[in-house]
Length: 177
Image (spheres, one colour):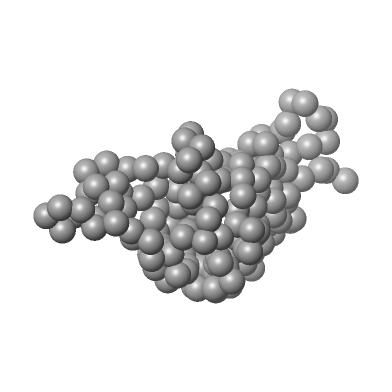
């Protein structure tokens, strides 16, 4: 069964350590994609999605511009981040591991997300529309995508961590035929 990612009800968020004491969080506001969900044989499920890098938002305009720059996402040169699954493996009745190719800054790496299915609901705004919800969490090392920018501070503390947590709260829809 094919579903379309609802860009208005899907969150793509990330967090990275700051000064080794706290987290800096951000999100991307422009996401689209398709997923095929096979509840009987989850290994036949797949997802293809993309995010517009220029849609990054952390709440601080100066930081957002720096993240769009060549130091990080290089949004002008690489306007899109893509993910295409290559393997889905059920881990429990309502969760699975999704492995796939993440392409960022023109570099493709294999990453995995732990996905929890949250359920289905009929859309109250459209009689023939169904929604589903899921949460996906993964961690990537930004250096694998040539994002090496950092500043070393006193006592050997780095300004930013390299391990980046990615969390997606996905709502998708399909129309009954």
